[in-house]
Length: 211
Image 1 (cartoon, rainbow, N blue to C red):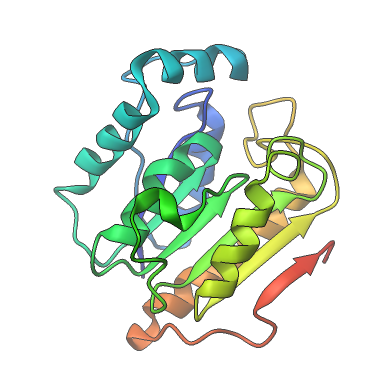
Image 2: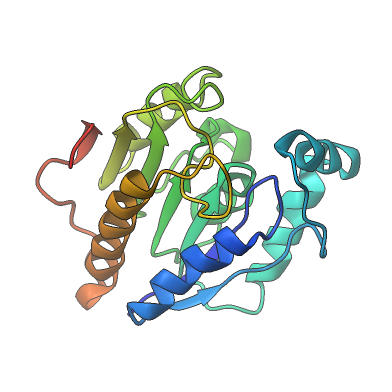
């Protein structure tokens, strides 16, 4: 079983993020869900991102880094949207990471130093193909580059234009896409922790609209 560190999105640590984590726990994985907003939950994404901007995105990353300090190094880092910042940084720069799962955001690997993405760290990226935040702001290009740099990298694109589709407590929730994503993540967690292997599955790369 894997140990997973989950970072929430710009609304804060919502009931939907907690529910997502519980699905991973139900499969037998150990899951940690730190609160990067220190108890604040926002009704709108604009308010949440505004709070993050007011304290600085560097502070968000620093809080995520601090949450990882007491945990083993051989864990999987998972982030939703804003939470991708600490998740991607830790997976890329903290030695020993088992893998990364990134939802609806990705930044160029150069943001976290010139070393590039560690080829032995597998990565899965999930997003909707017409999400204005993911597909419309260049994150999808960074995602494709990251997947291409990893020895084991997968980019899953789902039909639709919703951001934060995996949070069951938000109007943007898409149950079908979330079910697909959960299935793929559980397979990913089993694979990267099985006998320490990080071998890529058949079909590694970019996939669109699969059932």
